[in-house]
Amino acid sequence: MAATVMGQVRAAARGAALISSDASAVMAALDRVVRDLDALWPASMPLGSNRARPGLAFGGELFVTMLYGIVDPDSGEVSLASAGHPLPALLFGHEARSQGARRATFVGMQVGPPLGIGGERPVHRLRLGVGDMLLAFTDGLIERRGEALDRGEQRLLEAIDALPPGSPRTVAQRVMDSMMTGYGQEDDCAVLAVGRSPDGHRRAAIVVPPMPESVKAARDWARQYLDDWGVTEPDQHTIVTGISELITNAVLHAGTESHLTIDLDSGVLAVTVADSGNRGEPLLTGADAMAVRGRGLSLVRAIADSFGAHRTSAGTTVWFEIAVELRTARL
Image 1: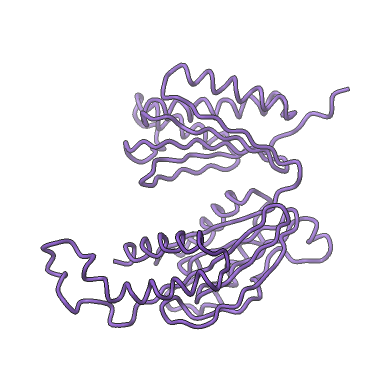
Image 2 (image 1 turned 135 degrees about the vertical axis):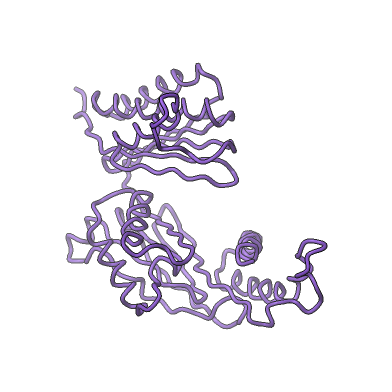
């Protein structure tokens, strides 16, 4: 039930954001949506369900928390508003820390009432410097049964303090891993990290057809960019090996075209391969001698500094990151 409600609220949020970029206006529109969902819920039940009967609703107790943000990628300006949602964390980059800033702190902003209740949600504005990062999360990351909320917040700051530098994706993955280790997951948990890259950030992307010959074509394409960007030969070999395994995996098991993206940011090269296939979860085992897919992904995880794989209804995304050395400028 909760997942269905959240899906409807997300769809409404996209529609409201197309009409107005003002956080207050978006949340006011969503207030009405959430209140209406309480009364309309029985109509959304499947026909014949014994739960679909008149009067079955949330009894006026439906509410939704939300953090709404608008980011200007050029200036780093961020506008945030919270409807009963946990405060996001702000991670400072090297420049800010060299001036005495700590690794991370929670954004000092006012929190308004949840959606469906009504009220004001003041807009808070901040600016991300180069290397800074904003980390938003659901309460499942910090809440534990029998533990005060401020203890969960303190554990999150301690986990962030212990993190090595990394991309937003790596930071999000490592925060999740750190916060779940030893505590388990008692509620749904999501983490979103947004960072501001330096001017030297480089990115290239290509669509790869689901054909065996695409593997070599993807390798050659990647090598050209890596060489142009000044990535050293040993690192090129490692990266291209990983790309070869991921594209082979997509060709053999997804049966759809895949999107290959490479990003170079502050000495970290990130590779992402996303397909739209629906043939099951990514495998990470090489127990079967014929498990080419599992062995390939296990190899990528072994050679990478960071690795992740996840599946949604839209397909599977697998990524890895490697810290690289760059050649000095050619004369």
